[in-house]
Length: 313
Ligand SMILES: Nc1ncnc2c1ncn2[C@@H]1O[C@H](COP(=O)(O)OP(=O)(O)OP(=O)(O)O)[C@@H](O)[C@H]1O
Image 1 (tube, helix red, strand yellow):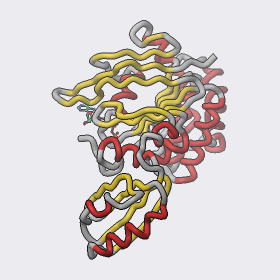
Image 2 (spheres, rainbow, N blue to C red; image 1 turned 60 degrees about the vertical axis):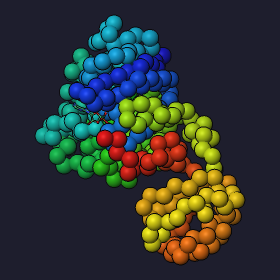
Image 3 (cartoon, rainbow, N blue to C red; image 1 turned 180 degrees about the vertical axis):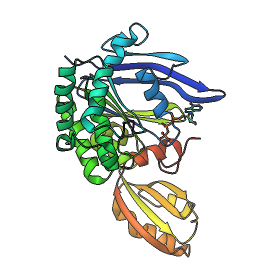
């Protein structure tokens, strides 16, 4: 039976900087929980505390009710870590890299060989088992790193921005691997600042900013927090005057980022009136796009900043 992960009130400070400020997470077997937030929000620090590499100032973590504090070895055997920085021996063949991780977890020689072949197949690298990572693309190295994290058969897999610097083909291969792991009942904690990935993969999403949880739930639950279901994004030739737009019927929310306007609207039919109002202000529209609200809008709504531009430093 696979086991889930519980983290309670994790907190970590570095000097006067609070990196993580009371983060709690609950992750069931067979689920992917996305920890979403801008650069510096505290995602990697949270992962570090969950896997036992970073000592928390406060809080606790447990897998299947067994805490890290009670039995560090047993806890860590249940976890596989895919760190943000690729960690491989470039001059050892892929298979030997995976076997080495197996050896570190105490697998026998026969188990190392058998499990390495299994996990290399799982990430689509079995045909490259004899090749060195130094000959691999960035995406293939990431996939090999995932294989290394899986070799000892963990219940919980921690993935810290596993698609950073990855080509689209490898990204899709990684997503397929993760879907397969979920079907097997593994619990996956996945940090990203790409809201598209959280939207696509996650069963539940925790949005963090400045070390704190600002929202959590399923995608549907998070989107339901927004005042408007649709959005218009308008790029102008200069900063707009906002009040005339905010008072238009059907416009629920107006936010401006320099020359970009983001409007939350009930219905896209309000677009012509918005364009007319901008024309009346003497503004030229350079680009207009529309779509359903996204996690980006949820973050914007909660913090007043965008995920991409909103570094938490
Ligand atoms: N070892 C450290 N010493 C001092 N400050 C640190 C250390 N590790 C992290 N921090 C600080 O803690 C905060 C959270 O950093 P963290 O790496 O956890 O964020 P993140 O959400 O993972 O960001 P990114 O998406 O850029 O990886 C940042 O302000 C960072 O500068």
